[in-house]
Image (tube, rainbow, N blue to C red; front, top):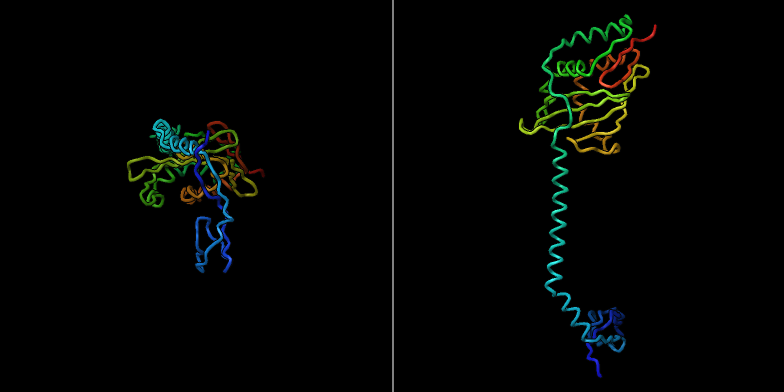
Amino acid sequence: MTTTTSTTTSTTKLLCPECRRENEPERVYCHDCGARLDRTAVRVKKEPIQETHMWVKRMFDPQRAKLKALGLTATRVIFGAGFAALVLDMVLPPDVPAPSKNQVLVSSLRFDLESMATKRVPTHKEVSEQEANVFVASALKSKQSALDLPLLSFKRALVTFHEKRCVLTTERSLQDYWPLYTTCIYAPELKDGRITAKVEGGRIGRLPIHPKLAQYMNVMFGDVFAALDRDAKLVSKIGGWELHEKSVTLIAPTP
């Protein structure tokens, strides 16, 4: 039984005998000089016509097309769901305490810091997380305009204390409509009258940020640090601190 075949040419380049230009295998005359090419160098490959028919049939198979469309739809749905979850994590507020209604005189804690730094009394002072947040809120209240950004209004900054860790979170509002939270996790140290703080992680909303990327988030808190610079200088004059869960113990310098 004779097998019907179709012929295809290989991808062998045709070398022009006149100008030595390499031409495509389907050419009869040289692309540059127009000389007739020797096509005997082109190998002809015979393929069974049945294979060609099967290939065309597979390509236009409606079931195959449906499966391909279903796969593309599933990919889009998965990608869309992942993107939506990412955005949702970024806009959802983290677990932070509600704004405190208690008021505290900023000068009270500042007076204690100055007394500890100069007179070394009291020798120890424990500040709770709530007291620290009320103090920060009072200290930043008069600097609201300096903390506002284009399209982003500053609402508050708050701290949470853990063993040897301090977490700083800022809340801003997009056109006073949608709250946005950014958080950095610090391991602060006081050494030789200087405060240093290593960034160990961060969050945008509830979305955790890798520590290596969180290093660049520090610039987002620059305006808050600048607003609290006076108090940071006072803290740098004391002997040290001990960070615990929900509180920090300030220690007067040794004589």
